[in-house]
Image 1 (spheres, rainbow, N blue to C red):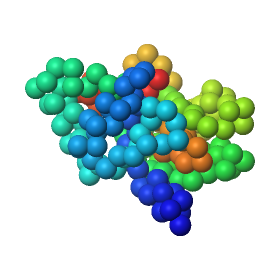
Image 2: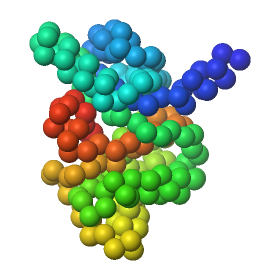
Image 3: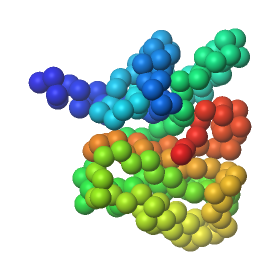
Length: 187
């Protein structure tokens, strides 16, 4: 029964925070004051639920301004719009459909897809899957008459995919968000 409750709760996450090396306890204390966060089975990785991504990030930024070093334990934060359970065999198709949800926001801008995989070593290969998803989104946008481009240096948007065990979360990180909140980033 407890495992079922944990699995149901795990699917309600909309943010992933990753700790700097050996800072996971400090990070947990920091974010648990500001939202509902819990550990994943992976070292230094917490998922959580916040009411509003922007308000949460603003609160973190203000805390750092008021107390320099406040964010030291935080390596990165990824906002998540959608989560779903997956099986390795169907992941590519599920992600292919999921990235298309961002087509209107990318339009003729620059973008790339980044996958952070935790779990399934040897079964999921991030780089080829990223390339496949880049092509899926690019082809769809071009069919719609847009002229998008892949840009790894300073894209308008990054489609961030977090694979945590058998759960996937996907979100869009815009250039504006990265500039405003430097801790919002992908590896």
